[in-house]
Image 1 (tube, rainbow, N blue to C red):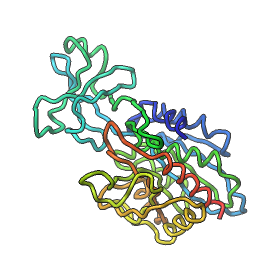
Image 2 (cartoon, one colour; image 1 turned 45 degrees about the vertical axis):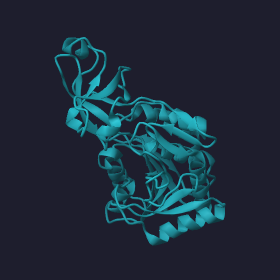
Image 3 (spheres, rainbow, N blue to C red; image 1 turned 180 degrees about the horizontal axis):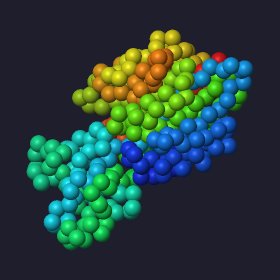
Length: 326
């Protein structure tokens, strides 16, 4: 799992520019599915046909995009003014190394020393002046936290973009290991989740699934001074009860919890009073469908060093295999 995770973490692919990671995923899953397509928005949709004559269609969605900064202006000294693409804390951004898709590197800094707001941030790319900067980047270019994947202890891994590449790795490994299923599996590696679940919205409308399961990360409650949500790394994949965007269908939620128990993996029940996942878009598609989210516990979400436990990711694969074999 670690090598697969490193592979999907590597591409620079912020919201709206997901093709580099989609290419990696396509190569990984192509031998294991019956069809692959890329829709007009950029979603990578992989279908594994069910064995029944009129199979139930279940959509699994993990988003490919991650948060970043977009260039809004270039100062005469060559520094870049930026704003956020997705949810970013200006304070946590300071002195962070960022990368542009074209290979240009930079450092996020602020013109004020406290109470930093997004408007105070700029990116230093080493340019001599505005003309020099314009040879490297343009207004509208996007950068992300630079790839820096490393292990913490025996089972944990830190990197930018764990949200949601850890879930992409989980979904890839599930497709690689699941056998024949009665249901048709519609695995969507979605785009633009961080800016409004846009990819899942169009994919669920187009494919009209009977049920939807989002796979994402969730916040943590196991560090000093942090008690909510009641989620701990290494204690298993979390099955969501509710977040700000969706309330999970009770029958689907309990079926996923039961699958975890049958597979012998740890699970946690998650109530998150904020945030949302692709489940919110699937739930309200067309006439509405039952949804639930499988959440990978993740420390320091939306930072340059998001931390997950590989055992939770691997447990999610086993849970899904059990659910689809039941």
